[in-house]
Figure 1 (cartoon, rainbow over the protein chains, first blue to last red):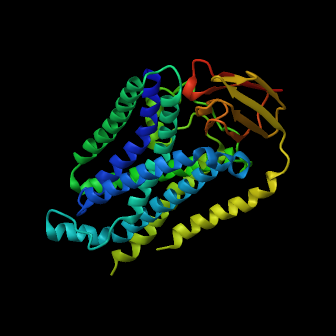
Figure 2: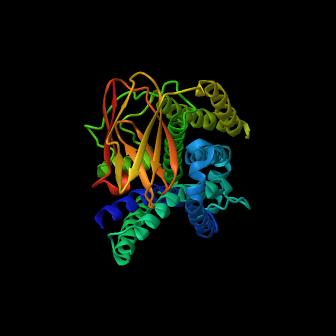
Figure 3: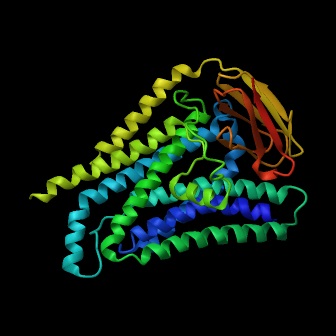
Amino acid sequence: MFATALIVFRESLEAALFVGIVAAATRQLAGRTRWLGAGVAIGVLGALLLAFMAPRVSGWFDGLGQDIVNIVVLSVALSMLLWHCIWVASHSKDMAMQARSLGTSVQQGQRKPWALLTAVALAVLREGAETVLFVGGALTGAGASTLDVVLSIAVGVGLGVGAGAIIYGGLSRIPTKHVFATTNVLIAILAGSIASQLVKSLIQAGFIERWSSPLWDTSSLLAPDSALGTFLHALMGYDARPSAMQLASYIAVLALIYAGTRLLRRPSRSP
Amino acid sequence: MTGLPKFAAAALAASFLLCAGAYAADPEASLVIKNHRFEPTEVKVPAGQRIKLIVHNQDATPEEFESHSLNREKVVPGGTKASIFIGPLTAGRYTFFGDYNQATAQGAIVAE
């Protein structure tokens, strides 16, 4: 019972933190709750579908099907987050000016944050599919009663969503002036974390061999399955034994976002 | 504005191409999951080489092959086979477990 709740919690934590950060980043957007809800709903539907297809997908490409689905999902999610960071950078001047002239709320015209919606849906899909698969197995497996399993799922998902709500609540307390800067940094870190997970999937599927040995081992300092390790993994991609390629991709993505953001801001400074 | 996503896509495509060549014959090792246990519980593999580990889940329920020391995790649905590339490893013992049935599903890779 406890083990089931713990696994469900671990899987839902990452998606919940992601949604919490995105919700805080888009707090002032008109109709935000509706499209964020749509993103989560699409993700849940996708997760059910993917879990249903998992036995077939698993056998694709000589047993690499699941990794390849992960690679595609992570690549699209990463592109969406990069796109979002760049979009924000190229519009930050207008948004700041609007915020000043309107005084209170920022209306970003008719633009819908499609990139973030897609990224949210994919985060829910990826974590959700594993949860659904695991829960399906727990329900059909012998031993636990259905009520026990259902209760464990409720506890696990509840705690995960609670963690997301705490992050959202914390970020919402930041003054409006600084909230964009903070959430942008968090989204950049999420992008770095996704890049590192993408590289890990590529290594696991055998597409990358170079730089695939672990650089260091911090598992004795901070175990990856400890509470803090799990939280830091979900929030910023903590990995106790990262390969050089993972670290390089993490740094490359952060550098790319930093450079891209600076580059796009410069022209609007001297109109 | 499309520059950076395009660059990222190109970099990804390039990394696929670069690595496709290294896909040739890696030594294989097999592992079976039965009654929420790994068989064998200890797998010997050569050190210093990448290994293709084939995990065959013969149970009806899914299992997650997970190893902190190998830095790997992969769900293997019931009745399916999954391939996982591990290493190259330095000589030593690397434990793994089934995340969904940790009480029984335990094992180790021994690289020598």
